[in-house]
Length: 128
Image (cartoon, rainbow, N blue to C red):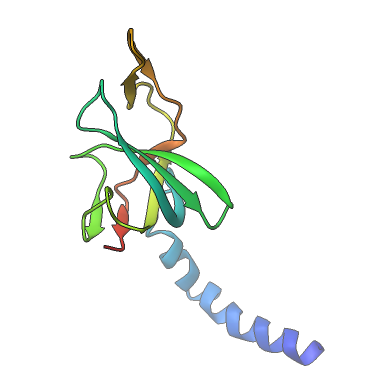
């Protein structure tokens, strides 16, 4: 057991001391949170077009993330399709702005609760 721990430490320590770990984590903005999972639904924000309300089952947290796609701000990669893709992987900016997605409730426009907006550092990749 001590030998295994020694091997792990001796393999990880050079990476940390050379800055390799910090270089990888620096690719994600500190203001953005990584996520990845299955897209459950995409709904147009009827009062704030062309924004899209996207429900994603996040494999890391095992929770449904309510995210907003804002064209021109959120960055998409791969197939550039959040409407029909199955899997999404990327980052989101935790909710800091109000009113990114509003939907008509029959009488007026109401803000829909959401966890954040699709990120732009590095953004979101789609499977199809």
